[in-house]
Image 1 (tube, rainbow, N blue to C red):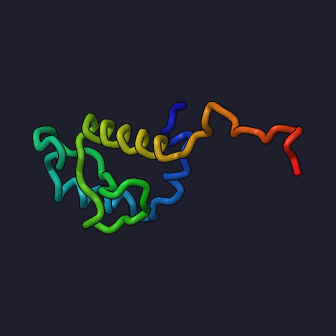
Image 2: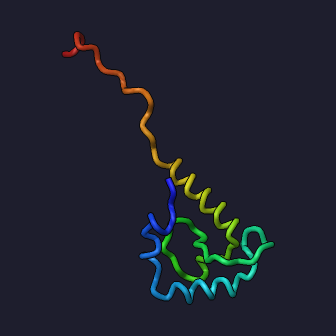
Length: 98
């Protein structure tokens, strides 16, 4: 199941001035805030799955770190969804109904 801009409504939820905000984040965080080695090219929401676009809620990341962070967050979100068990609940015996 691929999740990207084509299958997401995330882009429509970005503010009209997103490019300006993104530029400010990348200028502030020149180096990736996770690995501290590569150049930051992505403005990432620190808290996952939020629409908080304030500068203090964003961080500059390099592409590899952003991909890893997004994958971890997606896996955690999928794991949090309760899946039905493999067994049906026991049914009462038809001869023992009151």
